[in-house]
View 1 (cartoon, helix red, strand yellow):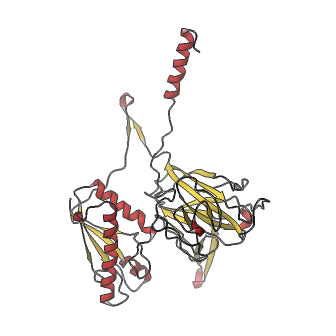
View 2 (cartoon, helix red, strand yellow):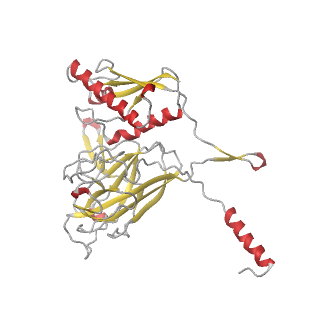
View 3 (cartoon, one colour):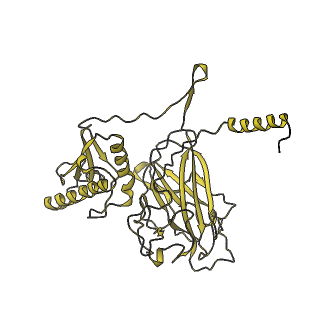
Length: 391
């Protein structure tokens, strides 16, 4: 109880000082789409040893190691809290994913595309939560996050490495594999052993600039992962299996402030892109199942970038166009490009874009933008574009 005026003054002064303490510059936008794995294309039905995690929106596996998706709507094998590979409730919501970090060379990873490129020399913070399955045969320490400029697409079911080919004089070439270096990694001395609750993994790093993809997993061989055996594990699985939930990436320094005369502070913001009638934009990260028009989860970020553009420009009308490479007959390519561009059109409508603002056309292989004689050229020719008709 405050007994005199001096006490009252000191009490009010302490409150004032609390509110005057400067807060760190911190970008509130989470750069991760679908951070807690709540959005999904279909409810998960089965744990496949050679499967492909295609149910969770905006997430996928970058290698042949089969990551797993769990949701309250899933089947017995993929349900929460109890499923084929353990018992755990998601940290938040009703969805989560799971990956192996084996005692052997086997590895599983998950990958996503960030909302925006990381900015050079800015400091970012990655946070995610993991929980060890009690069915595991041990625990590891070195789970972490790797930020890259390019998408990782490997068929390996082992640890990801950086494979480079060095050519020496006289045409001799040598393939060298080096360890990838995640920007954020759980400390070696702290094995992740909690099976009942969630363990936070977090860390700060300075971006090189241009990083657009995040891959989560264990990037270290078993001898460098601090593998530990625990008496309370059931050893039903051959390695350490971890559930993952609530991933976030925030910029800690991106709100660049400039102090001018009279102590006025101006916060700089990134310039908005300028669009023009007739402008054609290639949607570079639209992916479909092989020979089908079913959109893959990797397409989510690119599609929602377009949705954001259309929402910010309510008078914009666009023409979508579908294109293929020259493999197959003209009729086949025409049908495939038609069904794929229609899938994009339908996705936009299902996410709130008025169909009166869009039209779509298909061109098959008639409008290549690269050489169809190479794999790289054919990949560029298989594309969806949009053209701005009016603003």
